[in-house]
Each structure stands twice: as structure tokens, then as C-alpha cells.
Image 1: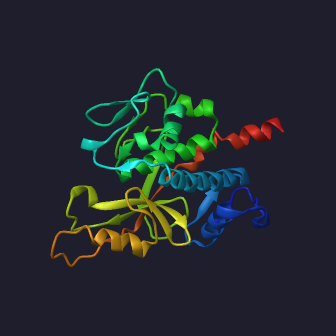
Image 2: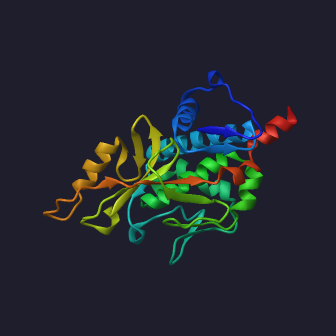
Image 3: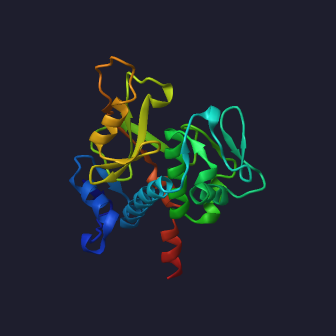
Length: 247
């Protein structure tokens, strides 16, 4: 359910593609999505659309799925440390994040890192670039490590909205790197998980089931939780606000 305070509205006739699908999913959900303005809602629709687009871009980027031991990041932008990849001090965060999606063949990482990178790319496309470079000027990337300004909220729930990140648990994994798969909800029962690709939920589970210890009878399953960005915080830096002010 979508609630705008004070009362306002967005015409669904003016929405298309991913944004229309996202809006319908939110409106049908028993969860309450509360916004202070219709512009804040428009920003969330746009941000979620950019999360989906970033997931599709990463899928086609050529980035490899691998563990930290064998990981690679373009050394022109990143320096490998004990706990992740640190942004070089002589490059802009926006340049470094875009490079991952442009020169994906130079990168290798696992699925949780992929989700954080997708979030960064979506935020970059949704807020002013100057604000992005100010907020994220000391990036350290690996696993779920993220800058506090990339406020990722994870909570229980099984009402997934396109643009959410979910987790397919694989309790009897054979190799620790396949203990589960983080995935972006694309809509239409499609998910993107780095290392598995774009699959239905059933296909994700079937894929993980091939990666269990021998003799396992416990299936992988979709966990009842979702991870989302703090839209209200990011909205203050929105490109949409700048466009409206200048029009």
C-alpha cells in the first residue's frame, strides 16, 4: 500500500516499464510505503528502476564470480587490502564505480559484493554526481561492507518488490562460496544473482541444489527477508530535485 503525506498522487498512466511494475507491486503489497511527497515516491520508483538496470548491466559486463582469494579489481581505480578493495585517492568514486560496469572483464568478486556494487551504481545514476563523490569519497568494497551513506536496510518479509535484494540459502553447500546466493528482484519472477545469472526462483534453487554436499536432502530455499536502500535519506540528493528546481 502506498501512502503519501500530505495527500498526493502519481498517475499510473504516466508510468511505464519497470516503474509501472514497481508501483503496482508496492500498491498491492500489504506493507505500508509512506512518503512525505509524491516526488519522494517518484524518486523511489526511479531508484528501484536503476537497481534493476544496474543488475542487468552487471550481468552483461563480463565480471567473473570468484572468492576474495582469486578476486581482481582494476588497479587503476582500486587497491587490494586485507578486508577488501579501497578506492585509490586520485580517482573519483563515480569513475571507479562506472568502470566496473564498463570494464567488467577486469573484475572478479562474489555475489554479496555484486549486490553492493549494484546499489552504488543505482545511487550514482539517481543522485547528483557531485553529491555521490562527496558521500562516497573513501570507498572500501567487499562482501557487505558499505559506506554508512549507502544505508542498506535488511528486515524480515516475503512481499518482495522489484529492486529488492533477496537471499537464496543453501544450507548443505559443498563449497563455502556457494552457501547461498544474493539476488536482485527483477520482476516477473526473475532474479539476478552474480555467478548464476538471470533465473526464476525455481531455477535459482535448482542451481544451488547441484552445489550441495553429496547425499544432502535439504533443498536450497528463498529466505523470508529483503534488503533495501534508505530512499528518504538519498532523496535529498536526488537529480530529480535539481531538474525540478531548474525548470
